[in-house]
Length: 162
Image: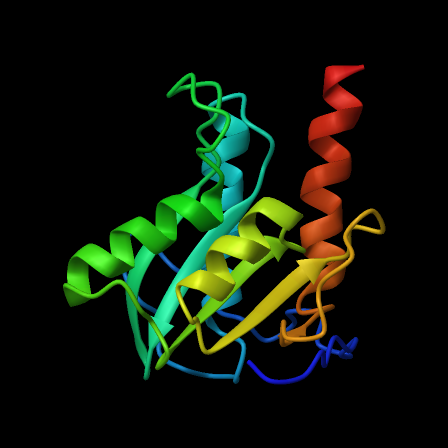
């Protein structure tokens, strides 16, 4: 991660096929893992958690998937990204993930950004933007992947909470 390349894409998720939870979809678009991340976000919402889902991919294979579990685990550090990192590190028996990419439905917070940098994750793709996040120049990410779908689930969750 050498440069701050946060950019918005036109990808809105159309064309993503429905995927049964637990199965990796066939790569139909370069951002197919975001479909699984969205399913994880829906699972978080079903559990009463802020609906954020994360998936870590190595090549064309999902090696980790998680959703926010801060309430369920009574742990303020149980962010989807952190849980996915721990899972991926266990799968690969490594503390570094340079050949892996993270797909997450919401732009990572400062806490998660630092963990991703320490894990040496290859690249981060996120859906919805969080205007309160300021990433360091060394953090490479691409935003706006399936942005409307990612924003929609967040809006729905917070609307129901009011």
